Image (cartoon, rainbow, N blue to C red; front, side, top):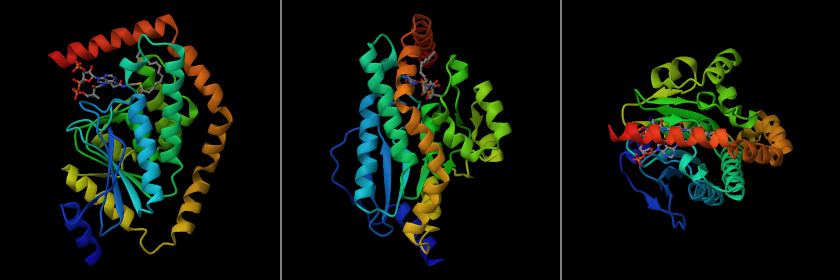
Length: 280
Ligand SMILES: CCCCC/C=C\C/C=C\C=C\CC(=O)SCCNC(=O)CCNC(=O)[C@H](O)C(C)(C)COP(=O)(O)OP(=O)(O)OC[C@H]1O[C@@H](n2cnc3c(N)ncnc32)[C@H](O)[C@@H]1OP(=O)(O)O
């Protein structure tokens, strides 16, 4: 009781310490009382994942791990979007080297989060399509605001999500639900995601979502951290091993796919439609 009251107080603006951080598109704030770090994605308007955001994310995860925080909560500074996934603008009309860097940094960011030994939770305070869902499902626990969308919509874009990118999704959904959702490129509403197990709880505000994530991380207070992390990593080891085997080839496959003229043309049309929609 005392512990959960403390978490609530702290989530509402109790004593906090800003850590020194050299990154710009992510920030890290460690709560002095709980020792839990909140890692915020801060690339308005939609936290689309460009190379800089992905590199900053890795650096923030490293910072949190080396500062021996008790857990990590991933969230967004944007009001209605957790993350819109990869920055399509950055993949459009570019060269192969840039595409190689984008995909390598996406892989690096995913493995840093998925393979983290810390307890991790996502406070999903907005839409989380594609790469946004990837980051959320790399965490161990998800709390989402109502009436937002989450899922891997790659097939809707005419592209195939590689196995590693599906790993987190497959960890939390029954195979049958995951297969159908992935083949349809389905985006779940928050309420549907809760019903299927893609998210664990719904919260009405970002503060409440942070509080619920902190309570999840707090549930490990009496568990030996080494035993906890080794147990977590045993569950994830097979996916990590498979990923390590194919990661180089996966980059080259992505570069080949994303540089195809018809895929580039598709990206151009997709971007135009996104812009038209945002102007309405
Ligand atoms: C065929 C296209 C893709 C081919 C890629 C090829 C190979 C890649 C292989 C695999 C990659 C997989 C991982 C990915 O993450 S791909 C990215 C997929 N993401 C999406 O489909 C999400 C698109 N965005 C949205 O649906 C909405 O923006 C969202 C629901 C997230 C938020 O809606 P909201 O109404 O709040 O905001 P908007 O007005 O739509 O957007 C504001 C602003 O931001 C621009 N924008 C949105 N998403 C992206 C993005 N992913 N990349 C770049 N820019 C984005 C949008 O165009 C608006 O810009 P502006 O008009 O204000 O200039």
